[in-house]
Length: 137
Image: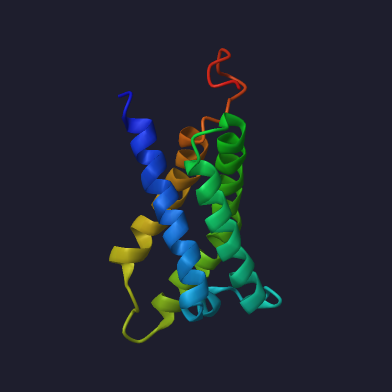
């Protein structure tokens, strides 16, 4: 169990880092799923890419537990904030004649979002109010 948290931290950090990188090299898919009510969608996609990369770097750095905790909180909040884009993507695909990526993609993705939120907090070693002092920096 002792290797699980650092291993999952690495996986989550690499996934967020890669996703952030993709915001720069191929922003089109991210822009296309951003809800219409979001202003300056291209700029939002750019800055969310920056947020993902910085969050990943902070989560993966080995020197400061407080910085990892801040990254865990930030990435969890980020995952909450981009959830509307995921829901919008789901709705857009289901409205397509061919069904887009289909339920086999979107249903697990919707269930995975709360897991990603929890995972960012857990691997970031964010202290919880109900914990007995463990994970406090």
